[in-house]
Length: 495
Ligand SMILES: [Zn+2]
Image (cartoon, rainbow, N blue to C red; front, side, top):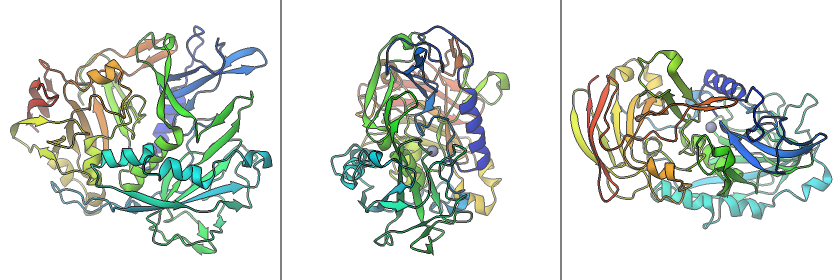
């Protein structure tokens, strides 16, 4: 879920325009083109194509996004989130945000709709199934939260009884249920008071609506047991879809695991896919939970065709991609379900950060962003950017400037592919504006060209030993990878 509608619209346009537009060789997925192996899955630009049966034989399905997995790549918003409604502590410039509340209590309410086929209901997960994926101590979600927060964040909660809604999930025009269009009164048998997060899990056998985080402020008329939900209540909409597509291929967003290529090269389509150790439901939940906790943006990328990214590049050479960070749960998370130390800073999950102010030159040694010891990030806030903000904006937006960190090697949340490991051999640089982060290409390589078009290359962004970075605002030199895996470098802020 985005912080502003304009960013949301922009990202929709990006999703739509990324659909491959020309016919090409059979190995390259394109909707409707012939494919050779039933159920084979390929991913292009964050869109997943599945080889499916159709009247004419085997063809590639429509590309679906990882996060929403619908038959059309259109995330739905059931309520508009005004920026100020997201609970964020009040940071002073150059001070640390307050740690988010912990333990954080979630009430999970499965929802059933009128138009679900009765034989489909038996396939939906039980409360115990949902509890196992989200709340059980040994679940992927719990160990991820413990590791990424360095033990400072604990998620607890309860799965309530499923609630039957006397409305359809799917409208005649194909749209999925949206509460802001069709006010709803959910009858819950027990109180959700005392829970920090109220999470609805609509279950459906035909389509999957987009997951998002929201509050009940303003346009949303959600009622529970006849009463309006308080405007400050944090909520999640986490749909599960279990059913078959129009060709009879079964889909299960609760149990299906994400699949990615073995590596991102020109030959990637000829190589095998790999499965992750987590489900779509789990990775989507973690993404939306981080939004709920106060990070309202995504992990994005800024690259250029073979050039170091700077603001002065001609616009024709800039490639900006929302969700473009392939290593972060707030990006596409295709190869590593990590969490940038910048977001850990925003959430208050660590205080091990260095700081560089205007005119300063400093040398640092950084540990990777999952390390329990040492500095894990360097902040460089643009003071002029901060001063331009109104007092209200200062409560929400901070950190406009740069962020430096080291990606982990051998992380249990990483694909362990060679190019992923290689990106830990140096430092990665993010540009930060408002609260979103943009991964910069510090050691540029050309964009990847395919039969169907081009894609920005973030598979190699790290600034390695012997390389330097200077975009006119900051400069980084003397990069040295230590035997411990820590990275030493000198940074100065010129503007
Ligand atoms: Zn999001």
